[in-house]
Image (cartoon, rainbow, N blue to C red; front, side, top):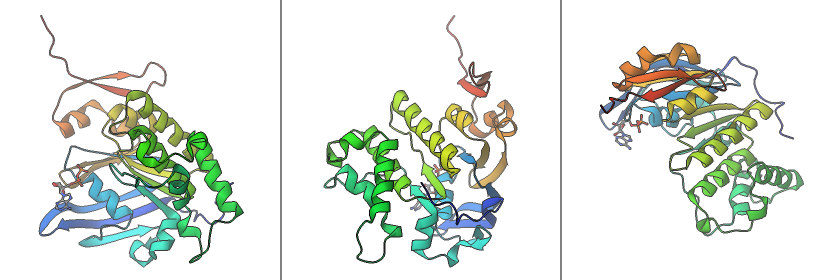
Length: 272
Ligand code: ADP
């Protein structure tokens, strides 16, 4: 259903060249150069305060680098209009809370705004996409419910459905599973994975849960204290030595019994 004909076929969606970022005079990101591959799921990890959210805001065009350049599809990010960026990128910020007076359907319809001409209403194709997004996130039966009456997990699904209705090539997510119970965490991740597989959408996300990152991401980037530490495929990055050093904590690493990917267990001192 989605129109992917206009997706530029570049190897990388983003390229950062010596990017630094300051809040007031405090340097938060230092001289970061990295590439984010197209059509993959990239996970960004690192301790609290290492600059992950700041980096996501740079990728989505909210934060402008103090130094260095950001390229989207080989073109300087700053040369895209807001509307053109919204056609390419959907960004779900941390703890995003969708406003309460609206119904589920109205919120999901907001995802179509970048595609509408000024003052025009939703056309048949827009409605078709909204219906599809509602269906994908099991929200069809709840489409007339007011957002304010929904649980945190349900609101998260509504935000994801709105992002899907936006038809982005790139989906950027800041801790999409925080505050969700393990069942909802797993459900959200499975929905995202299905979306990624079906539409080849590039996903870039910050999640604290290393085990989730390991299950779902095929490319990983490690930040520590505003500095790029390493990137690479799962096995290169999610290894005991690097994770222990980055988080300054001890772990046991085991293989997931179903998928075989590395899983991290916090070190247990034991009770005698
Ligand atoms: P992470 O996502 O890795 O936890 P953040 O990018 O949120 O890290 O924050 C990196 C640093 O920037 C932290 O020290 C944080 O306190 C600081 N910071 C974040 N937002 C602001 C802001 N709006 N003004 C000033 N400092 C900020």
